[in-house]
Image (cartoon, rainbow, N blue to C red; front, side, top):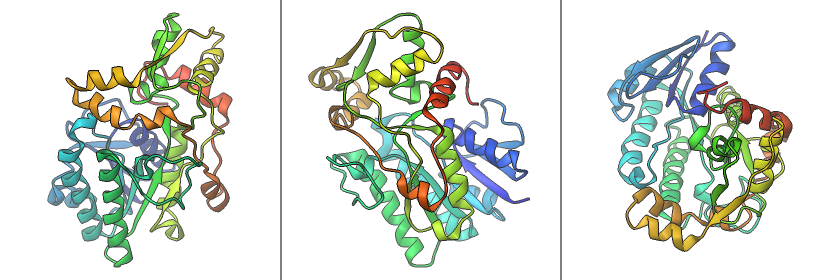
Length: 311
């Protein structure tokens, strides 16, 4: 039975903990408060993961250390991530645990082609550059033989327990009541949606495979659906009719950003919703033998997961 340490108890952290516990591994989930929904088979620990000495203490003897943290406020990333990512990497270097990071597509920046692992990290906005720098530092440590690292990137989350963390899932509760959905950007552009369960499966898979370390993987993801199509599919999974949907104009988002740091950062990343945002996950599917959860099941899980922390 191997020890695995997970930092963060959001939807990806919880799904990862469940997978590891179900196969009989020892799982420690580290959060600042130590509180949250019950995770059968996992032990919760209250600790500041930015404290490298404390995290090293918890991770000593572990096979893998998972970075599933997700600072909730876009406007605070430049103060939160440097200390946290530095602590995670230092802990991996000290303990020998493989650092397995759950990440977004932000480092790629605006692109006009489907995103693959071969694209350079060319972010043009602050938060994308922060995440790109985190991976560059981790990769440098790996190349220098100081640590084992691997990163899994995914598009917008769907599935059980995502809730307000997802652009699509945050629309579902109101839509179930027949209310119009207001979304950032153009709701009729092709967009990729990644089930959090598939992100977790990829994290666990690459943690176990030394041949996967030292690189980025894009988690298995279904063919793109527009925001409008995806919400209609989720509602239809429960026999509910589609609701009206409107895009929030970019100028309105920028105006709201004048008084809200999170919305200000979201405005700088509005390219995500104002152009096709599509991934190609064929590398993980072909080289790791993974496949995305069938879209019909993703929609059902997303609908059934409304109001619940995880599946």
